[in-house]
Each structure stands twice: as structure tokens, then as C-alpha cells.
Image 1: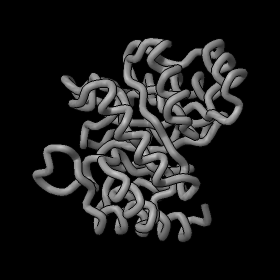
Image 2 (image 1 turned 120 degrees about the vertical axis):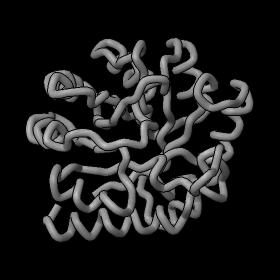
Image 3 (image 1 turned 90 degrees about the vertical axis):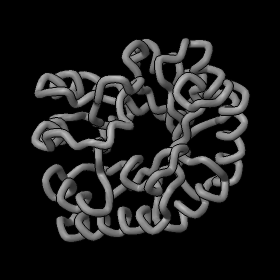
Length: 228
């Protein structure tokens, strides 16, 4: 069971999350959704990735970025995984092939907005050429897919896990209190948390390390129980 935690704010926070059990560490270098300038967001994320090194899988988010901006994220941050999560920049087979030809180490994780059962067919199509999927909730007013803080129908996720051609991470309102139930319901390859492992009343999304630890432990315990 892979545990993925978003969104790191400092190198120290990222390392604490790794110590707490996070396998994947996510950062947001996309200026339009970070509250920072482009240079500030990129510098912060580079410092975090430099500190993490090979202790965890490094995931960089791209939200409706231009092809040039996406290339800049890849070349400046050297992420292990590029997380494509927007309404206008979904990965295509041609784009993924081009990325992999130029950056052979890079894996592509496509976000799928879980707005209804129609997401199942869409996700299965993405799974044929992406390395992994992340199934996430959506709410009006939030750019891209995710950061919604709400769950969706896990039956849709389970159908995708059963049909997809690549590993699937589930997300959307997952925290220490419900991640075990989600694992039992879906049997995914991995689970992701953002809002429900943040400190309460934190306006920048500072992580609550105790919540991160509990999230990881509860997910792994449920996976062990199921033999996955």
C-alpha cells in the first residue's frame, strides 16, 4: 500500500512526513494555485525535493500549465512523478510518449475527477498510457482536480481499480478516520491525503504530523488485513 501526502511547505515538514510513513511526497510548483510567484513556488519545491532525496518518491503537481511550464517543472525539479491535474492539460498518449522519450525516469500520474460514474470509462482510457491514476473529488471554485476535502462514491473507484491497466491511488477527503474504510472498500494500490492531514486553521496547509502518521498506519493496517 502506497501512502501519498500533499502538499509540502518546507523541507523539514517533508522529512517529518517521510519519517511518519509517507511513501510519496507531493509538492505544488504551479504558481497559479500556490499563492506564490512562479520563482518562489519553484524554489520552495526544489528545496523540498533536494532535502528528500531518495527517501521518498517525489511528486510534482501541474495544473493547467502550458507545455513549456510543464517542461520547466520537469527540468528544474526532476520529479519521479508528474501529477497532471487540470481541466485543460490532460495527458495524451502522444504527450506521454514524448515526455518518456526525453525523460526516461519520469512517471505520469493522471488525475481523474470523480464527478460521477462517467469517470470510470475515462479513467480506464487514461490507464492504457499513463503509469498511474489518482482518483479525486472535485468542487466548484478549486482549480484542477482535488483539494476538495470531501469524499465521493468509492464504488466508482472500485470499478476503476478492477478495470484499470495501471496502478490506482485514491484520494478525496481521506484522513486517519476513514482511510481504512476506503482501503477495504476499494482495495487500491495507494491512498492520498491533503486536507485531512493538515493542521486545523492553517491557511497555508501546514501538515499535522500526528495525523500523517495515523493516516499511514491505518492505511497500512487495512492493507495488511486484506493482503494487499
